[in-house]
Amino acid sequence: MGPADSWGHPWAGILFSASLFTVWSLPTAVHLIPDAHLINTIGSEKDVILSMFGTPWMPQTHGRCRESLAKPTISVSQGTAIEHREKVTFYCDTKDVNITIHWVANNRPLVFHERLQLSPDGKTLTILTVQREDAGNYQCEAWGARQVQSSDPTFLMVNYGPDPTEIKLESGVLSGEVVGVTEGSNVTFAVEVQSHPSPAFSWFFHNDSLRSLTTRTFTIHAVSREHEGTYRCLVSNSATHLSLLAALKVRVLERLAKPCIVSPSLNLQENASSVALTCQTTHERVRVQWLLKDQLLLPSKHLVLSADNKTLVIHGLGRNDTGPYECEVWNWGSWARSEPFWLTISYGPDRVDITMGPGSGVVSDVTAELNSSLTLQCRAESQPGAEYRWTFEHSTTVYMGGTLTIAALSWEHQGIYNCTALNPLTRLARSTLVLVRVVGSQSSWSAGAIAGITIGILTVIVLSTGLGCFLYIINVGWPSKETAEDPIHEATTPTSEKEPDGELSSDWPRLVYANIPEPQGQVRVKKKELPSETYGGCSQSPTKPLPKLTLHPSVPTLPKGNMESNYEVLVNPVCNIYCEMKPSI
Image (cartoon, rainbow, N blue to C red; front, side, top):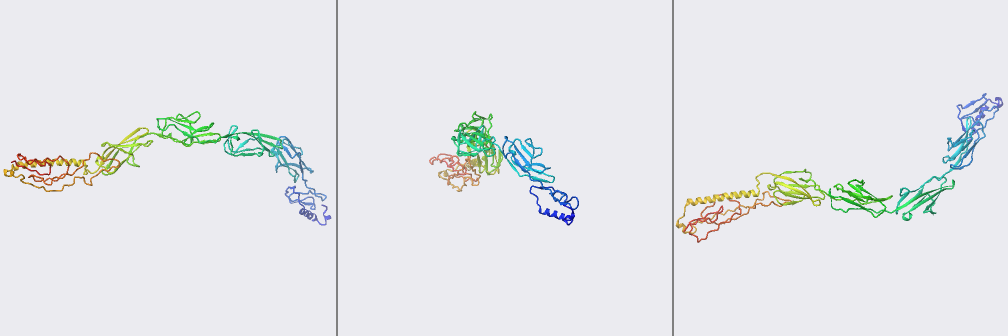
């Protein structure tokens, strides 16, 4: 600006500068460097310029503004390079002086390393050996004292590959350099490769080109034996002029059928036999392994495997060797497992125990009330289940079954009971004893006791009656002759009296058996009727009637023609009868 008087007003220069600021806009590539002062006054108060957020113009003594930095331009020796083969040079062109050149790659400050080379003025950047990570956008920036200008980005393309690769199967099992696939399954071949640009794919089978296959993957549906062989894939990069050949050998495995386990031994006994289990399969070139209780079986002295693993021998069978056993056949990716196989091993019987029912402990001495019920259970661990036999010391009868039940106990049931457990396959038997005691009132007598007492009373009465008759004859003397002329001097008819029933009353304790017959040898009382009329002069005995028992037969009556005897004949020599004296003629 000039002197103040040339403008006509001392503030005209300031207003003119402000108006210029409002209408002037910065180029987009220009960066302003902030200043601490909003207004810088240089020289006199007339030489003032506005420099908010920087100084777009430098102060001029002759009233002229200095121009901003020019936008630099970038050039590259080649926009496309091949990895490891070529080098690339970038050049940053700018007409400004007293500036500094900075390089930017992919919007970040460029990090220098041994493959990058920079000229002394910073305008030339050289990548000595291009690699794939060098691809991207490059820019250069011109930095002034208070301003930065950036060039437009330039893209560098790097071609590379194909890298070494291999063919993979989405299904199948790798074994060395061979992949096994199951017959009938679907198989997908795929090639994963690093390359730029994307390569071309060519597939070959048995050295024959599969012209229809030009993608990196292809699928064979329901693979069969015809698809077994070596597959190759040629990967080609047209930019780098490099090619790569990958190969894979495929083996088609037959679908395995389920094997089965067979055992020639049927009657297996604990500690007395061994058994051989064979895994039968129709397939060849398969491997066999055994499983016990769904876990891989480990061979031992007890469990011995054959060389081909198809036969398992179990020595010294124990009751815990029942299984289940399984055999599995497999070849690479195909496998099949047999159904579980169980062994039936006979053992026992072990210790025999007698209890009084579920929840009861083992008993060897049982005390029970008279007329009460009693249940005894016999148990022994055995395979197959044992047969049980009961015997009683006072009987020769054998009772079968594991449970012995007596519905009403009597005195005859006292004694020792024996239970024997027999295994029909192992031919082993074990037994145990239990003592049964019956307690209760002694007023309840058994039939045998009643019969003994009845016979004793009968004997006493017979002796008493005979003695009475003998004393009567002695005291009365012999009868007169006249009296003897009458064949029946006196006939006395005894008073008929109904005898009580000789059977036991209904309330007498009666033995009821669940699986035991009634005890042998029980005395039964029978009723015998006496004659309604008797002969003789003896009166009825005053003693009470006795139970009717079957005794000796009566003495027969003498013939009427025998009247010469001087002795009276005892017509019926039993108790509770009359006597008749016959006088001699």
